[in-house]
Length: 221
Image (cartoon, rainbow, N blue to C red; front, side, top):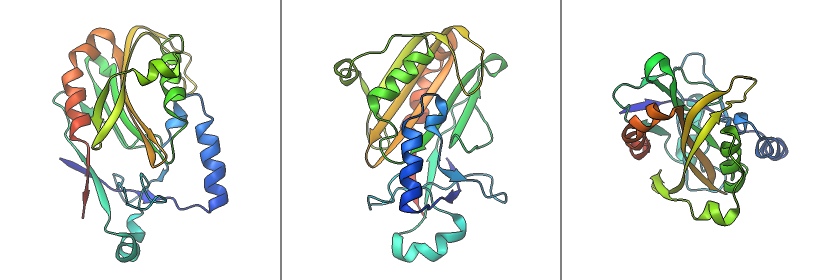
C-alpha cells in the first residue's frame, strides 16, 4: 500500500463558490481538476475525508495538519494497491494518482476528486461519452447503469467504445479505444476513476482496474 500527502486549499466562501461554479461548468477533462497545491518538498498528496459537510472530500495541508488536527481530526492518507504491470506517474494538480500500462504506455488510469457534486452524474457520464464520439444518454439510462464499489459506496460504472479524443488541448483522436470508469457524485464530493486505452489492452486490464479501485481507502494517522 502506498500513501500520499498534499496541501489543502481553504479559500473564502465567495472564492469557493466561484471556483465550484467554474469547475462544474467545464466540459473537458479539466472539470475533474483536483483542488490541491503541491508542496515542493513533498512527493505525494495527503487525502482528507472528514465528517463535517465542509471538509468531506477535501485535502489537508501538511503544514497545517499539526495545528488543525486537534480541532478537525487527524490527517488522513490515501492508500491503494498498484496492479502488476502498472507504472505510477508523478502526481499533478489535475490528478491524485495516475498510472500508465501496456505497450508504449498506451493505457492510462487515474483518480481525480472534486468538492460538491462535480457537475453531476448525468453531465459527467455524457462528457465521457462525448470524448469517445458516442451520443449522450438520458438520465433514466444513466440511472440504469451498473455500479461498483468505490470508497465504501456504490459508484456508477461506465464503459464506452469509440474514437477517443482526450481534450485538454490535444487534437489527436485514437481509434478503436475503450473508456472504463467509475463516477461517484454527491454533495459531499465527487470522485472519478477513469481508464482509457486501445480496446484490447483495456479489456486485458479490467481485473487490474477492479484491484485498484477496490483497494482505494483512506487511513487516519
